[in-house]
Amino acid sequence: MKNATATLLTGLAIALSSGTAQAQISDDVVKIGVLTDMSSLYSDATGKGSLVATQMAVEDFGGKVKGKPIVVLAGDHQNKPDVGVNIARNWIDNDKLDAVFDVPTSSVALAVSTLLTEKNKIFINSGGGSSDLTGKACSPIFVHYTYDTYALSSVAGKAMVKRGEDTWFFLTADYAFGHALERDATNIVKAAGGKVVGSVRHPLNSSDFSSFLLQAQASKAKVIALANAGGDTTNSLKQAAEFGITQGGQKMIALLQEITDSHGLGLSQAQGLILTDGFYWDMNDETRAFSKRFMEKVGHMPTMIQAGLYSATMHYLQAIDATGTDDTAKVMAQMKATPINDFFAKNGRIREDGRMVHDMYLFEVKKPSESKSEWDLYKLIATVPGDEAFRPISEGGCPFIKK
Image (cartoon, rainbow, N blue to C red; front, side, top):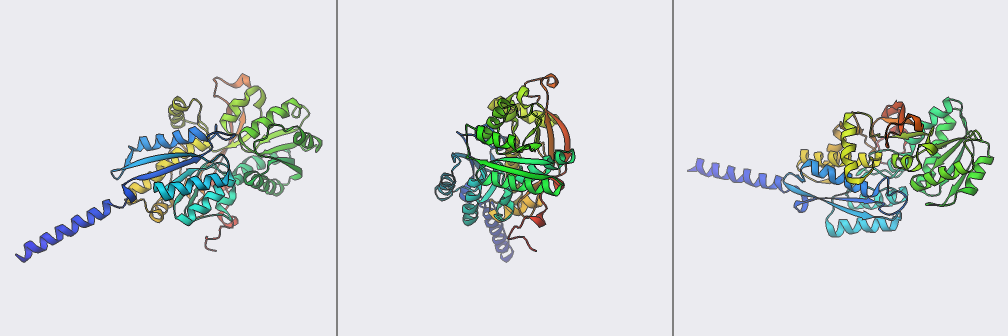
């Protein structure tokens, strides 16, 4: 009788512990919020494509993790920090959100990161660029997945100075991303032996760059570097062509130019531009397969931000599956402990400061005569290993990293 009782109690204990393990998904659902730019200058590079990339990963994962449904919410932050914070706060307080993804526009990303740190919710950023996100503004619950201003500057800046293009003038978007990009590129250029002869700042989402471009032209710098993105980059380049800047011998470099920007400009205007990217659709069979599926849904090839979001979503869900919980600390620990090997990154890894380290690429935009199809836009100049492309963790100044 004692043995039977013991067996019964043991069985009950196992059942209870099993039930507890199964209940580690909070609220019986995993909720991801894609907070992005759906309506303004970054909407092509992020926006609907960011949402679709995340949804594709959820669908490919099976729509559930540990038997619990995965729900994806979407929000348009309008490139305004207060709007972004309010959306994220509402998601967390009322919708019981587990993680926020994407968040282009560094000023919004920095504000949202502060909120999510307070709320202890995971933040996986693909769209925001400021290297401060893993530097002075780093957070233990933050992952900077796709690119940052240091990598953009390091890859292209070193290459151009090395080939003699050693005097630079910056045309910079006047907000957190532009400031960080100019700062990081300036440091890279000077360290490589180059010189910065001046800079000018323009408002976000500008339509008229004539006065800024005239100042850049008058500087006689060999390189006019665009420390902006999205519509600001394409408008800068279009108007630079009207002024005949490149015909005058000065080089234009777009420090952040997505494939949607290059496609929008057209090869006749974009040919010869040097740019840094973290992904290109035509690298291999894996990248082509994903990109074909993505294009069927969105209508254009994926940007690095959108491709990175698919990879990040899968990595996040795999961490929940491996740990059996959506607990922030346990999931973050699993993500940092697990290498990333997929179409986006080979042997990628998330450092202690949240930087996902992976190869970056230096491309040149093809001439029209070199292109074989509508999206055949780039030729690869160099593959830069992640440890060379991204800032060393010792130089970031992340406050929670042990000295």
